[in-house]
Image (cartoon, rainbow, N blue to C red):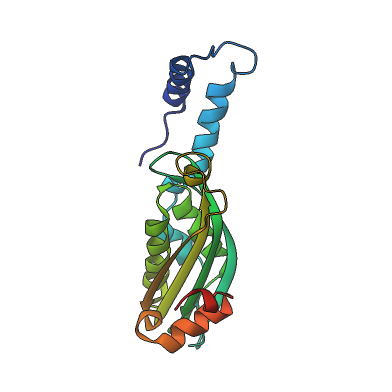
Length: 193
């Protein structure tokens, strides 16, 4: 995706306000098109990030084959179906093969993919595959738990709903013991069969 055309977005937001029956020149709305354009530029900045470059900056040699887990990484994204936010937590686990990823880069990777128009299912898969590919991991597990405003504020209006998605690759997929260790470490073992 190319850089966002902020001027065009501002014009379109102004037109949207008019189509909704609002007066975009009234005091409370006159700066709204610019604020919304700036907000979308931030919320969708993941399109300007390269996940491969993010991870490549912090891959370190380490003779280790133990499970590495990072829990409770905050996720904020926009649902591509309604352009409404979904938000929650991402849990990542992987078993390295001689290379590890710096922990802060895992959080940056989550943001890189989350700061795009998304669906939670794809987001979960993208994170898992990027980690696997960056370090040739023996196995990767990613679980995302999120609340979706498109389901909470409109439609079925279920405020207490929580969507959980998982992606398990390599040994996390092939070995129930490895998968269960991961789920236990992230505190979700009882929630998954």
